[in-house]
Every structure is written in C-alpha cells, then in structure tokens.
Image 1: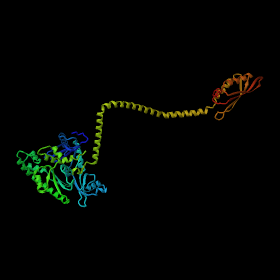
Image 2: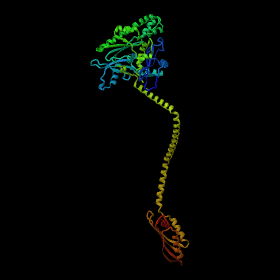
Image 3: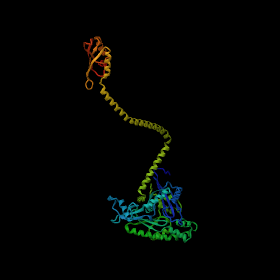
Image 4: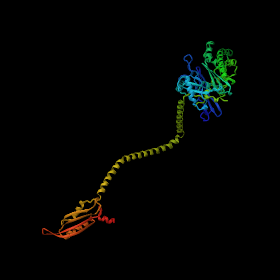
Amino acid sequence: MGLINTKNQLSAIGLEIDAHEFRAVQLIRSPKGVSTVAWAIFPRQCTRETQDLTTLPESEELRWAASILGRRGFVGNKVSTAPSTAQSSSHVFELPPAESGAPIDQLARMEVARARRCGPEDFEFGFWPLPAKGRTAETIAVALPRTVIHTMIERYQDAGLELVGIDLMELAIHRGSTSGVDMVTDEINASLHIGWSSSLAVLTLGETVIYVRRIERGVSGVWALAKERYKLSDRGADTVISDHDVQRNAQASAKVRGAVWAMLAAELASELDVAIAYVSHSFRMAPFGKIQLSGYGTSNEVILNKLDQILGIPVECSPARTLIEGVGTGDNTWATAGRLSTAYGLAARFDR
Amino acid sequence: MSNEQIPIVNLIPQEQVHLRLRSQWIHRWVMGVVLTTLVIGIPGVYIGGNAVLTDSGMVAQIQDVNIEYENQQNAIPQLRQKIKQLSAEQEVLDLIKNRIEWSKVFSILVASAGERVRFSRLTATGGGIEGDEPIELYLEGLAVSQTDARAFVVRIESTQVFDSVELMETTREIIEEIEFIRLKVIVKILSIGRTPAEDEDAG
C-alpha cells in the first residue's frame, strides 16, 4: 500500500479514551474505497485504584499510548478525538432560516453564550438544524469550554501528538455506528453507545441527530459487580465485559455474565425507552427503525435480549465493513469492531 | 443514504487551525527545499558553484563600482569648489584680457630710445572702458640728430608690438647752444592682446 500515493488519503488516528482503555482506528481512503490501516484496544496505564481517571489522560500517559500506537502500525501523529459529553453542554433554540441571509453563526454563538451565561468567545461549538416540527424550526448546538479545548491541545502536544480534530461524541458515535448501515430518510433510529462510566443514547431522524441522552451507567458497574460478588480477578472481570467466549466452564461463565450484565441492561433499556418516547412524541409521524449498539457489550446476549424485550425494537451492531475486515476473522470480530466503532467514526472524519 | 451527510464539527479554534496549517506549509516548503537539494544537489552544486563564483565576481564588481561612485560623489563638492574658483579667475582674466602691460610698453620705448633720444612728453588716448578700442600714444622728445630720431622710430617698428608708428614731425631746437631735433611720434595700437604679426597670420 503506497502511503505516499497522492490519490490515497490517510486519516488521523481516531482515538476514543475512557477511564478503562484506549481504542484507536486509522483508515486510508483510496480510489478503491476506505480500508483500515491499524486498530488497537489497550488498557489505561494508570490503575483505577491509584487515580481518578478521566477521559483526558495526562501528557505522560498519552506519550506512552503514542508509543504503543507506533508499534501497532499507526502512521503519523495526528489525532482526532472527542471529549466526554460531561464536559459539554447542549442547547436548543430557534434561529432564522439560512436563506434569510442573517449571520446564523453569530446568532447561534450569542444564543449559546446567553444560555451558558458566559462570553461568546469562552467556548467552541457545533450546531445543526433540527427537522421542522410544524412551524417551529429549531437548532441544536453543543458547546465545549475553550479551557477544556486548550488543555486537550496542550496535553496532546506535550505527548508529541498533533490534535487535528475535536469532534462531538454524539456525532462520532452516530458516524461510527451507522457506517455499515443504509440509513432510511425520515426514520427514527437510535445509537446506544455503552461506555465505561456512562453511556450515550443518540437518536436520529434520517441523518440528523435530534436528541442525545446521557445515561450515567456504564460497564464499570458490571466490572465491579463481577469482582465483588463473584470474586473475579481483573482479568476475569475483563473477560466478562469483553464478551470473550471461554471454552472452559462456558456454562458457568455465561451464568455469571448474565447475572452481572442484567442490571445494566435493564437500566439502559429503561433510559433508552424514555428517550425514544420523547422523540416519538416530538416527531409523531416518523416510524422507528433500529437500535445500533456500539462500545462495550455489543454482542452481549443479555443486553440484546433486554433491549428487545423492553423496547420491542430491532437491536443490532453493524460496524463498518472495512473495520470488520481490519479486525480480522474470529469469534470476537463483531464485538471488537463494535467496541471500536466510535474510534472509527473519529477516524472517518479524515481530519488533516 | 450514506452517513457522509453527518455534519463535521471541529471544536479546535480557528486560530489554532491556521497556526497548524501555517507550520505545515512551512514544514512542506522546508522538506521541498531539502528534497530538491538532495535530488539535484550534485549537478546543482557544480553548476551552481560556477554561478556562485560568477555571482561573487559580479558582487565584487558591484562593490567596486559602488565605492567608485561614492568617491566620485564625495569629489563633487570639491570639483564644484574648483569650478567656482576657476570661474572667478576666468572673470578676472576676462576683465584684464584687454589691458595693456604698460611696463612692457615703457620698457620697449625706453629701450628703443637708447642714449640719444630723450622723452619730453608721453600721452595716451583711446582704449575705451573695456580696453578694446584702439589706443594712440603721443610721444614727444629730443633726439641728438635726425638720424637718431628716425632710428628711434625704426627700432620701435621693429619690435612689431605696435600696429603703426608714425613720425609726425621733426624740428630743430637749440638748447643751451646745442642743436637738437625735436620729434613727435604717434604710435597706434589697434587690436589689443595680439601682435601685428599675429594679426597678419589671422588675416
């Protein structure tokens, strides 16, 4: 593969970081299409016992991660990432139509500044129009404080990495989880990203993100339950959350897995139900499509069954075909690809 | 419908993006220069070396010309001063060019008179304000004999300093019982600054 071929475009390293692990994907776009250059999943350097981990590691840990990425076949030092939704704020307001010639960007910024009660230059934001509901034309905006952005840029820079893209987590999840899906216009779909400390439900109408619900439940609870109630080691707990098939004592393993995932599955289904009800109420004429899973437990039977049981909506994990091909063949291919789909969504931006 | 329609939001501030793009361009330019140097370096060094040598010679020449120019620029005030001085001298010369050196005239007359002619009167008329008009000298004196009087006139003529020498009158005169010849001579100077010989050559 000729990387210096001008017809080929190498993506930045899509990097998703939570309190548990790093997930990274790099792509290349050629006339033949998009293919995966490299992928990696590896745990955080700092242990949970010694540090209150955030999604933004210190420069030293990022440097360590960069060295691993280099060894795993990633090319270059450009990175695209997304901050945690805990650090951003979401706002919905009305704006004049784009055809009116009004300075939409400035008006949106002022609206966000008013809502956040801060200066218009104290944050960066992204916004897009929501589908019309009757006569109402609303816009959704997601803002992130500049202090957070500058801290991110500095830490990556100190680690020898170049931060070229900071995406919104909901857009990265949506892009990653629907890359392998043909979206139907005017159909409501949901992407459920199961994270370590929290999860995110992203609801869309066609291609447009219309509602985001942060769920303060993640796989860390599953991990803790496996360790505390079933006295599993760290490695054993990792196996439970990773959906790895264990040939030895498979029946016992499945029983433990079912027990520890059940509570999270019920909570996620309940939260997602609320989100779907809200969106369905807002857009009554739109039919509901599917729920796309990403993150941890995308192949977990307990999650799939519980969501299906409570919501009655088809649930699937459809990572991009190129990502599945990049991950390779094996029993855990779909689970691993599903876990990497947000990192894929970040790489698929092809930031320069 | 593909998900390429999902909006691309980049929260990196524009100033950071511009800064990064600028450094990227600088990096690319530097790399381009380095690559160009490597690719065409060896023949380039040979060809370019000559060019550099030529350039250095031209630079030296330019420096020399500049130095010379500066020297000449510095000499201009002195030359102007010199021109002013010469102009002043020229003005003086213009003023005195038509003047007669009377000392020479008197010397010629005295020398021509010798021991046997004595002047009793000498007047000059003409010349004008600028000294460019004919001058007429009137000489009156006593000669020992007629021969001495005529010899005096001839000697004056032979100097070829004067345009015409005319012995107007000679009369006998007794002074203390000795006979002398009183002579009256008119000497004319028509063209100032040139001898009659020169006038003939010019004519």
